[in-house]
Length: 367
Image (cartoon, rainbow, N blue to C red):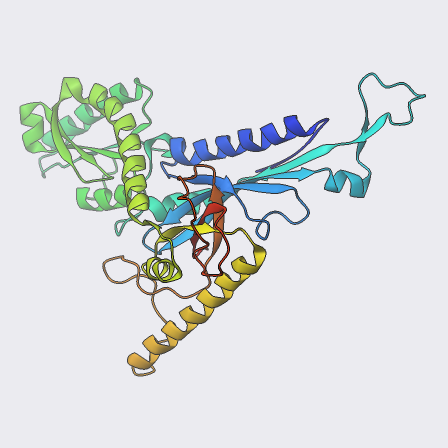
């Protein structure tokens, strides 16, 4: 998805840049349950030829890398002047020599990488973990019958009634009534697809008039009476959605380090963290950080390979517990966050170049 727009004045164009960025942030946070950081790209990282670029940045904790989630660019009048994109000024007459003005242009886009970001942020060893708002199936019903055909039929009938009642509350629900697959196979099938909630009905449940609800995001189970199943399923959808976002935000925030010096910066970076550092906002220092982190990363990878007897191809980014290990690759500016912490008076650039810090900048290794 992308958009290209033209305006008669800078004020309206700049407002749209931020309005679109807010919409993109809402897609990630309100639909995909992925927290993002809004900010402005550096002069080096902005769209070539544009006036400024705004961005939302997401973080993949298991890889220790950031990812540019979406961008919204102000192109100013640079391209309209280049390609002679003009309009007639309102109220101008044919005799006015300055009746033509150049348009103020914007460009914005959000791609299918949103799907990849959602999968990487929420997924686990069992497969997808889908936020309810975007899950094609929100609730799946599975019976756990014994060999008794009469009992099997009663279970299927009751589950069908429950799923129909859940559907009536605008919840996307499905009864997996396949007879050629056993319950364990069905559990795995729907867990891999990340369905937020599973409704189980076994022999004891049938006798007691209850069901067991199992959440995909955290594995929690609760026993619910048949009469309360539809309402409880509907209640759990926003609860799961909200808790997935807050859980992802908590993990992201725990991996965001605030530093003041180069040594602190490298320590945080090598832990696979996002790093917020005071910066002088010069392209020269930005390029130095990129080159230096790349050099140090390559040295670390070489040492790791030698320590492994020369058999390793490099340094794995994630260990067996899914935690970040030493990462290679250059660090880059991700954005100058719109929400800036207070800058202590006299703070110098973290690179040690002796220049005063002008803004807090978010850095990290990125996809």
